[in-house]
Length: 349
Image (cartoon, rainbow, N blue to C red):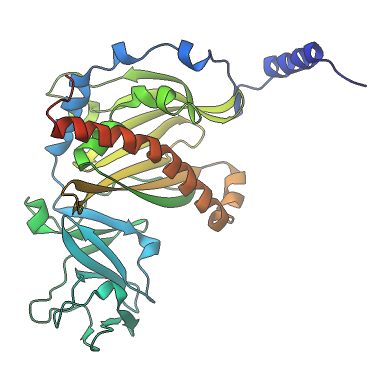
């Protein structure tokens, strides 16, 4: 028996009418992209600017995100440049992280190309061994591994009062979780990345393939905002396929100058977070600044089925990283454009 188009529509409508509201995946209706409700009237540039200034005034303790914890290993070094400073990170045999200058103190060889042997670095140029302790002018910097990300404390770059530990955002507790870390680099400064994330109004316009039915319910007003009220509260549906998605309530906060946290506060995956960390790399060959966006997604759920999903984490993480990078390909265009206008003195107010 064949069902015509009208019959198929009728069947679909009956399914939608009977769809349980308690299920995480819900049907939705939306107008064509160009006919959705404009958000520019509700998106005052001054609100975004003020939120960014409040974030920049919070202490970081001079800590910078280096990369994913999984990227720092016991069998090979991990090289990175932060604020123009070449660094190398690796793990000792006991799993602890060491971070130090990326140039060998002998003749400047790149230690990112060294070999890790019995918990120490062995330079490939002349065999100089570094076990993570000071040697001449070569001295390690404080390092912290929070289980998802590795941080380095660079007092000369941060120029703040140093702290013993970085400001690590609150993460899901007491629930099964899967974490994935994606890294992309753009021609901009950390403040441009932060400004992008503090503009939730652009979501359904700039990322219609991922977000729909987005509405900003709360936005901090003014410059003097208490910390517990300094958030953007957003109602949004994460699009799955067609007109099916997962509606949630999410908040955006800045615990420190270079971090924006999106946390689901109601709906499927309550407690899950997306941490966006902006790490300044230093100028490129063209003299313009480079910033690494290191985004950690920690998904959690109390649903019994999610425990099964955690066992498939190695297969799920690449998909999570792919999704994050796709969004940031667009968002870096936003951040880079913001930097270009500011550098030219043309940023609109």
